[in-house]
Amino acid sequence: MAKPYSGDLRERVARSMVEGRSARETARLFGVSVASVVKWSQRLRATGSAEALPMGGHRKRILASEQAWLLARLAEQPDLTVRSLTTELGERGFVVSHNTVWSLLRAAGFSFKKKSVRRGARSAVGRATTPAMEKVPGPA
Image 1 (cartoon, rainbow, N blue to C red):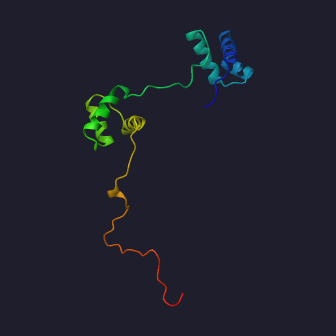
Image 2 (spheres, rainbow, N blue to C red):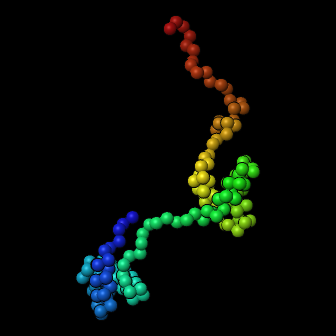
Image 3 (cartoon, rainbow, N blue to C red):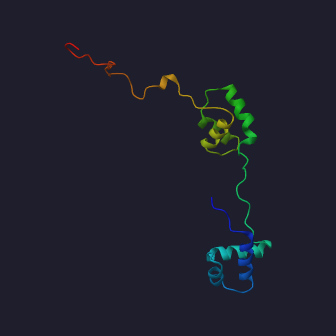
């Protein structure tokens, strides 16, 4: 992600606009877009500063309060699917996607393991077995 323009430039651009220059004239003078000039001057009028808002940070997980319940539910019934947990959470008032539930479970240390029953992609019925090596007639 790109870095924001410096606070000094933002302040000078916004003050120029507030002092009476047009947005296009200010944009040409400072070499920025007209949209930036308008936004920075609006922010200066509204908040008293044209500084950029903080970038990045950490968002708290939506289901952080339900993590204990989810783990207890999986301890009770370990064969629950992520989609069924999503449905149960919906009944508890948390309308989230199955990806949200899966990311919480993955963070808690769960991983997806394929079952041995599902090893083959195709059915073995009606398929002839292929030997590892073909026998060639005659002397070798």
